[in-house]
Image 1 (cartoon, rainbow, N blue to C red):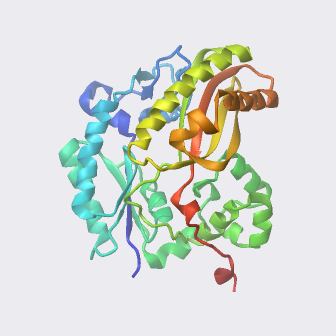
Image 2 (cartoon, helix red, strand yellow):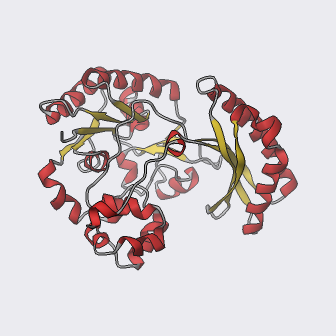
Length: 365
């Protein structure tokens, strides 16, 4: 049976909630994030602010330089969580297969429904009636295309890619829209003369693999509009981390180690809370993340052999010296002041415990 997948993405969610509650903000450039002068970044911005180039994850001070009249509000996550819970309950009216990606984004599998497009329209109407917020909806035969479709007519849009339209739609799709293709990956693809999905198809899989490793398999399938991922109603956490942006750039490694200790204490607490739900989960790696004052970053990792139950990691498998060592590795890569420091762990996933073997052969035959 042909799948019918709906992707729902709320329009500039945090900013939209604030504009709903404070109508005087509807016609001004608005962003949600840390205040200017605190070296913070933005969570999101409304569409007016985006016309000035203001984007999520952008440093607040830089955003204000781009848009001097930008209004920046601190995030109110309790309010956003409340709105999200209402929206999630609406999803459950239409499917019991709902994969929540974040507070403002989810996939629904409605394969058994007669008319997925009608369901998409009803979801948008229900969200508006219940919350006064708009959502953009994409409907397609798989998750990859449904996500692209939801972004196709933002804001407050609905776009459908029917099975017989997949080939014509995907062929000229820019590679920058493929999940996992970031700035560096895009530059690499363009250096190979690859700008569209059709360009990827002209490259033999083994040639792509030389440049992109296992990610070449994703490129191979996505460029053909193929995505076999299921909508997962039960989400599995793959990593957990904590980080801190310093008020002033740091250059003293010993001072950074003191902050590292504080971050480890916070991470230990978060891991403990996570273990309440998954007490036998194993940690496969630890890592330290460093972001320099030029906004480039380095992540140094260490694999644990054997993998340890995460409840034992802080008193047996790994001590603070391991994180010190990873910090020194990152600092040795680049001699620049540091603006952010983070620590984290990566968990062994169910897929790695019971891997699925994929092959190029069926589609190359």
